[in-house]
Image 1 (tube, one colour):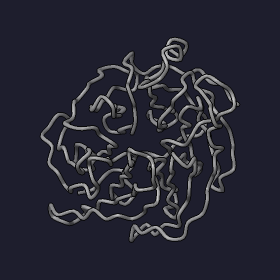
Image 2: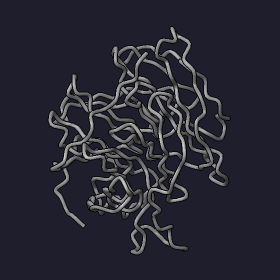
Image 3: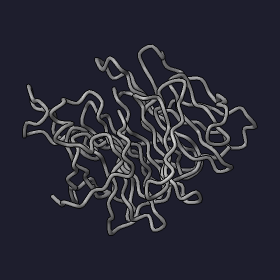
Length: 308
């Protein structure tokens, strides 16, 4: 397992940091704090950090090609023309918002916005993956359910050639891969991409024997899949066939999602969580909840923009 030097982007500890992306024109990192119901952004060195409170918990965000953001909130997908601007709902949620909310998601290379959900009781596989296509629809975008059968949607990513969609169910410790038609945006045949070991019965935080469960993900320029392992204190890099290439140890127990940034896309950022963690864990791992960064050899793919 590789050990790198990890730095905190800002001194702010998130409750549950998620959905980071690097905005190349602004040279800023954006991310969310789901539990604190807010968005954040900061310069690549952590300067000028700004917080923007949301009316409900954000699940994921993406930059829009003509400026601003697309934001998945609990009850629907929203559009903000600029940072801090009024929110306009593009599409209402199709799930029961009392038990389900939007979670991990991002734009695809064609400009559609994808957002998975989490079924919060976690007692059945009742979550799904939705796609919002606003291209040429003149204010009437279509939100379409594309996949289901999971409990906690995570790990969404698209292969550089546009022919594979990756999607994880955190609860099942499973990442699947689908054949993908980039033009139609419709997933095809699926396969098991990588199955992580389940949590041992009776396992408690701080004990050995558990490598974590798959959370958010990113793709590098070589098509490798980088996945955060929640409660596993590590990131893994998987080849396009699902083989383990390397593991990166982290100074926190609960990483949530990686992304690549900086002018050369060789700065690896990772959001993390502190919410609900044992006090002794937070005391021993003081960077818990921080956005972490390090430098890597292989660059990542640039962020994809939502098009409307």
